[in-house]
Length: 426
Image 1: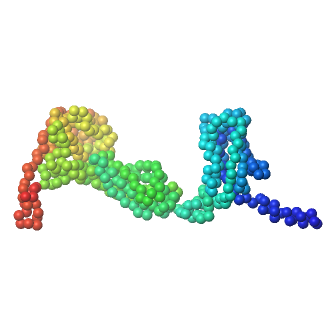
Image 2: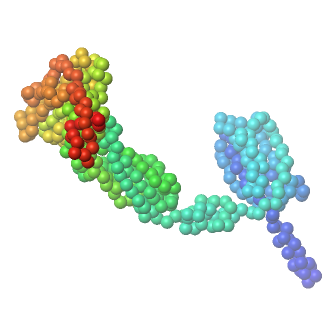
Image 3: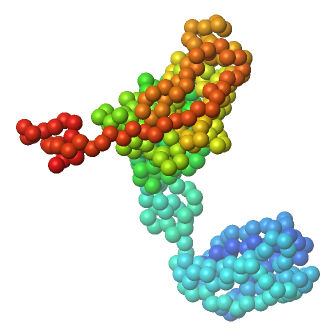
C-alpha cells in the first residue's frame, strides 16, 4: 500500500515535468547524398536528453516540423559521414526559429566541408503556437491562431459587385475596356476571361485578377481593325472565378474608330470619322514630303479572298488574305494614308482568281475601290471588279490639301453681328 501511495504522489510531478514552456520550428533542406551521409541532432545541455533527431530517406528531402521543448541551452549537431558537408548541385539549408525569437539559426545555404558541425543555442520561453486559420475573411477564422495551417475556407463568390465597359481607339482599332469590382473574397479571384460577340466569335484568356485589388480591368480588340461606319455588334465578357463559378455577362456595343476631320465646316470633313486626327486644318501628314489620300474598299460576297498592299517608297500598309471575314460582306472600309509626293500604287489581290466580282461566282455583290485626294476628288477607282488574281492602280499622285483662308467676324451667336462662316473672332 505504501508503494502504491508513493507512486500516486509522484504522478503530479511526472505530469508537470512533461509540460514545456517553449518550442522551435525546423525548416531543413537536405542535399542529394543525405540518405546515406547526413542527419542532425538537437540535445539539451542541462540533462543531455535528445529532443530531436532526423535521418532523411530520400535525396533532397525537405523537413518542416515543430517540436515543443523547454527553454534553455541546446546543442545542434549536423553530421556528414563522407566529410564534404551538405554539398550537392541543389544547395542545402538549415533554419530554426520560433515566433518569439525569430530566426535562431539561418544557414542558407549550408556552407563548408565537415564531418560534424556543433552549434550551441539558447531557446527562450515562448508560448506554444496555435494552428488555425488566420484570415479574417474566412468563415473559419480563428483569432487565437499564431500559425496559419492552411485550413481557411471562404464563402462562395456571388459575382461582381459593379461592372462597366467603355471603348478606346488604338489607331483604327476599336478596343473595349471591361472593368469590374468584386467582394474581397479569394473565391472571387478571376482566373479566366471569356470574350465574344453576338455573331459567335469567342476567345478565352487565362490569367489572375485578385479580388483584393478592388477594381480590375481588361482591354480586348473588337473587330479585325478599322470597321465600317455602320458597324454595330454587341460584345460580352464573362469572368471565371477561382471557385469555378461564372459571372453575369458584361455587355457593350462599340462604335468604329475612323480617324479624320470631324468638323463639318471644313473642306476636309469626313462624315464617317469618329476620331478627329487633326486633319481639319488641311492634313495630318508632313506637307513638305507627303500628300494625304483616302481609300474606300467595299467587299464582295467573298471577303476572305481579298487582300491589298499600299506602296509609296515602300509598303506603308496592307491587309493580308483572311483578315476580312464573312461578317464583312458588303461592308465599306475607309483608310487614310500619308503617301510620298513622288507617288503611290495600290496592289489588289484575290486568292480565288475571280477578282471582287461576287455576282459572277454565286453572290450578289461586286466589290468596289475608290481613292480620293484630301480635297475629296477621285484619284483612282476600280472599274472592273472581275480582275482575276491581281490588279494595280498604277503609279498615282496626290495633291496638296486645300486650306480655307480664315474668315474674320463675330463667332458668338448671341449677338446680331454673328457670322456663321467666321473662323476667327474679330
